[in-house]
Structure formats: structure tokens, C-alpha cells
Image (cartoon, rainbow, N blue to C red; front, side):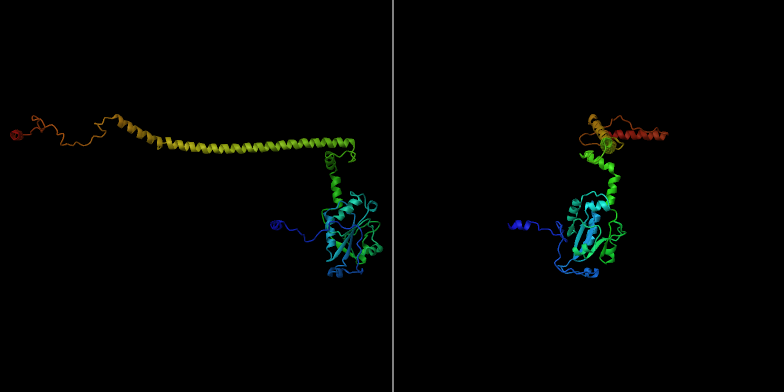
Length: 343
């Protein structure tokens, strides 16, 4: 058990805990409601006396621009309680136009926003003093752009004059009108998409001819997608083949260089094969030549075991012919002396 207690992760906490759901009815403030100035509200109020801020709107197609405006209203003062008034479908269709979401859907969207403390149904189009006093509202938060409606150039003009208006900033690049403009601009795309997802032409208020046109366009798009997929696959295949061919050519070049180098090393002018051939030819010549007659004759040498035959006694030394009678007589005398020595 102790090990399990150590291994169990601790619960995570956020810096600002969001409300799971906001209340749909008015929250009665128990403290006496005295009028506050903006400077007093910025200094901070007691815990049981939060600054009650009111923000109203249509909030159709609830988006990040709405959420950022409510975030600014909630953080205007250190201790704030944000009440959001949502106008009904009847008032909205009368003064502004048709909405995409119903009033119940718009109420529910506001209840899930973390900055909202209370959602007020069927909010009035123009704020009266009786309404402000009934809900004990200190300040009204809205963007500072004059909002002309219901025959008035600015429906918040009297709130501004009473010093109860606090401005917020609009988020550029997104609004309900922008989202509706996108849908209208790309109507054919969304109609085709919903037909493909199973909606009927009656659900989309599409004529029979347009339905057939959209379905044909969907088929054409599917064929284009298939062709595009095949092209991508074929490009990938060709790329792989080219990559493999480059690898094969590179390996072939390396192997051919290695083969040529080995060939030259073996059969070149100073190669191993020539040296082997010379060594083998020398051994063959030695094998076929007789042992008594070596290839190179050594210098003559008289060994004691085998003495040379004595010179013939009739061998005459080769002398040049005498050039004079005196020379001849001298040679004859020398020959006679040699004979006497042998005797």
C-alpha cells in the first residue's frame, strides 16, 4: 500500500480554475450595493462585494474573438463578477438578422466559457436604468466602436455618459460575419462535402440539378485524387529505380576499378605473374640441364685426388722461329739440357 501511495500521481491544479458550468439565474449580492467609481474598482473591493460587470451580445457561432472579449472584461478589476446577457432569437432577427445558432445553443456556448460567472437569458437590446439597478450592475463592458442599432447611433451612449462604460478590444481577423462570409463564399464546397457525408438535397435546400452537378463534381474529384495518388506512387517508384541504378553504377565502377587494379598488379610489366614465370622458367632450366656441366664453369682447379696427366715427352714448346743463327743454336742447346735433366 505504501508503494502504491508513492507511485500515484498527485492531482494537477491550474493557476485559474475554470467554472464547469456558469449559473443561468441572477446571483443575488448579499452586501449592500453602493455605486463604485472605476478608480475604486481598480483598487479592489471586499470578497463579498465583487465588481459586477455586464457584457451583452448575440454570440452567434461562438469563437475566440468572443472569448477574448469576455476574458478582458473578467480581468478589468482584481475582484470581478461577470454577467453575460444573450439576446433572444426574436430580438436578434428583428434588429440584426438571422442567426446560424439558436438562442438555446448560444446560451449553452456561453455557459461553457471559463470567464463567465452568470448567463442572463433574453437580454434587452437597449439597457435601461431599471435593468441596471435590478441586476446591480456596476459597469458595462464592450468594444469602444459606436454600435448603431434600433434607430440609435450608439446604443451605449448613455452608459458612457454615466461613467459606467469600460472598453474592451476587438480581436482582428475573426468575427461572426467573417465566418458566415467564408461559408457563403465556399457554399458549393460545403454543399458537396455534406452531400458526400450523407445529407440529402432537401436538408441542404439544393435543387435536383445542382445535386446531380455536385455529385458529378465529387466523382470527378475522386478520380483526380486517384490519378494524383498514382502519379505520386509512380514518381516514388521512378525515384527508387533511379536511386538503385545510381547505386549499381557506382558499385560497378568501384568493382571495375578494383578488377583493373588487380589485373595490372598480376599481369603488368612488373607484375606478380612475370616474376612467377621467371622463377618457374629458371627452375625448369635447372631441372633439364646435367649436373656435371653447370651453367657457369668454375675456374680450373687441380685437386690432389685427381692429378692431371703428365705432359707428353714429345711435346715441344711453342717458340717463335729464331731470328738469327745464334738464336737457333741457343734453342738447340736448351733442348739438350732438358733431355739430360729428365734422364
